[in-house]
Length: 413
Ligand code: CAO
Picture 1 (cartoon, rainbow, N blue to C red):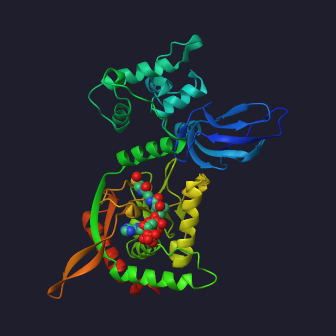
Picture 2 (cartoon, helix red, strand yellow):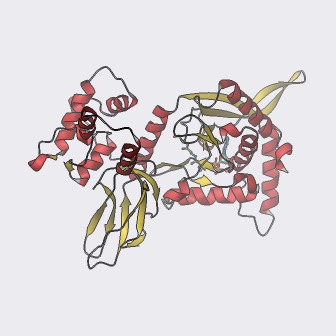
Picture 3 (spheres, rainbow, N blue to C red):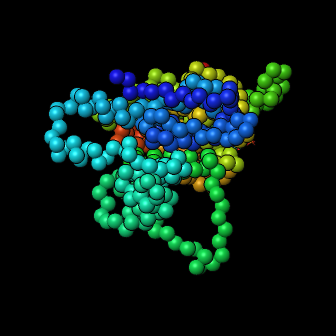
């Protein structure tokens, strides 16, 4: 029995096509039966398309703005129900007691509107644990509030799930008691990135290794090449950015340290080494943080990388990236160098095992051959998943990266 199910656009009656207004799910997230996947606009009305299968979203085949028609696949779901059935057929026969225990966790009998289901998912509230007070046992929004308030008082915390629930459901407070307030709703991107960052922060034990690379020569070379480019007819508009050099140097080091270009297997018993070098780059947009992916960095010239980076960040800022543009990264970089500020500790972009943070390069006196010389130093921070990477490996990786950036001759050709 297959556990991967394509959920398709249902028959829309007389309507032949509809435009996608908003997608509510994300790859890696879970969805309940009947929970809304996306909303579409037809000539007459706006409709939400519900899930016909509960499970984990493995792929999203459409993007906002797409025109869709009946029977078109919209997402692929790894079905919870089918996995459960498979496990049941493989497992030894259960006792009556086991069966009764399991039946309590089956969510088929839960009655709740798509909106309540979405709220519950956003707040990590298991609907099968919520006491319903609505007509015909429907779970209402206020039932979720009561559950969250009760949960926040529960002690002690014994699992990651409980810990998350406790952290995301602070006791309710009326701040107006202390002074005037104003509510500012989060954008869709901000909500999505917040939940991903929170999950990544909780799931991976982070350690950050700092480093500092002397990029005096690299900058001199970059500026010289930029001037040469500006005088060519074909590539004069390309901005040869520092970030494209850093991406190239990082990939050069990743090829020597394959455990950093990898993901932990789902059972956490092995490491999946990736033979591709796709780098996610954090981009700050008016709507929030997004991480588009630049692919095959090892195979691309610096000018191509700089061109792609500029196109991707422009698309990101215009809100034109699709979810496919943000998938498939094997390593990530977050650069705040153009904005100033000191070093920071980036959050790993799971399922990667490491992320490189870049801060502002500054000229500092460096003691060389019995005198101080002004050198341009670039602060670096490598956050890594300590389940996968040991401190000594991280130091070796950082030293190799510092060397690569300080002397670009070894990898530029
Ligand atoms: N140190 C000093 N100067 C730097 C620098 C650094 N590390 N990195 C870039 N600069 C300078 C560049 O040289 C450039 O100056 P010139 O215009 O004089 O050449 C200027 O800053 C602008 O750089 P850029 O246009 O090349 O931008 P970038 O490649 O540094 O960054 C991008 C591109 C998309 C990464 C960036 O715009 C961005 O969005 N950064 C924010 C990412 C973020 O929010 N991360 C946090 C994630 S966790 O919340």
